[in-house]
Each structure stands twice: as structure tokens, then as C-alpha cells.
Amino acid sequence: MIQPNTQCPCSSGKPFADCCDLYLSGKAYPNSAEILMRSRFSAFSTGNLPYLRKSWHPDTCPELVAGDLQTQWTRLEVIRSKQGLKKSVVEFRAWYLENDIEHSMHEVSLFKLYRKRWVYVEPISGWP
Image (tube, rainbow, N blue to C red; front, side):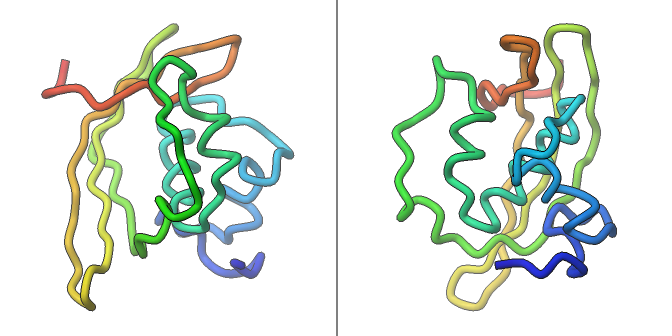
């Protein structure tokens, strides 16, 4: 459990309580794909499975179980984002620990407006 004054896992530099906790707790919903991306990283970091399901497009959401969230995510870098009216793209790099060695993954992600809320759809190849 992350303490409210701890820095947010999404690497925004803000306290968790003033950043992604607003979304993970249901007090607000992200109004852009980049903010959704950051909140999803925090959800992966904290093991918030219900939020991940809620923020994933139902057509592409896999069957997630708690064991899928064992990775220790350490930091996030949003490289660039392109906000559109109905679909958006976010390119990011996420770091994680495996056998006490830090590794990273790189993804360009597609987000769409679904029922008036931004949701993660899928990774795409390359920048549009």
C-alpha cells in the first residue's frame, strides 16, 4: 500500500494522493490518454486489478488474475503523446526489476474514447 505523501509511481513527481490515487480510488477519471497511461502504470505498480479492467477496452482486455501483477515496476517515462478527439497514442518506456536487475519495455499504445471515457486498446507498431 502506497502512503499518500509518497511520490506517485507514474514518475510525475507529485504525491500519490494528488496524482494517480485520485483515479485508482475512483474519485476521478483521467481526461486524457496520457493521464490514463500514467494511472494504468500506477495500477500495475500497486496491483490494482479492478482499475486495470475498468480502464481497458472490453474487446481487447485479457483475462487478468492477481498473479499477473507480480512484476515490480520501478519508473515510467512518457516519451510523447498525441491527443485526439476519439483516439490517442502514447509512447512510453517502463522500467521493472527482474532478479534485482533493472530492465525496460518500450511501447506505443492506442487509446480510444469508449462510453465517454479513455480506455487502453492495444499496442501498435510504430508512431502513426
